[in-house]
Image (cartoon, rainbow, N blue to C red; front, side, top):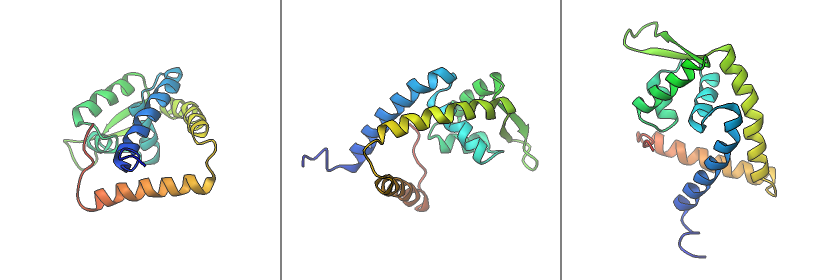
Length: 149
């Protein structure tokens, strides 16, 4: 085994960049970027996130997240509401149109993932997913923030 194949960091990065490209191509038909799709997923799961929360979760700078959310807002997919206890902050929520767009895009992304995972057993996929979750949890539990891209 060569050094690159033995380096999980390199393999994960290479897989992510490859997957991101294929998913980005698939999302064009839904007029969404990968970051926009991820943001809609997160807001569906956790309504009311702040811009800073979204930025952290998509590993981008707050300003970039704000601009991306602005595009989603102009498209009518999200709305900003004042935070009930923090006057300086806003909460972001999906609109009905955002929920519908996400509902249309999810099967497209799942089809890409299924195509790329062909040949792997459900147990193998579960192990990989568990490893990725634990790696992320190990970083965040040590108080480190996931760096922006």
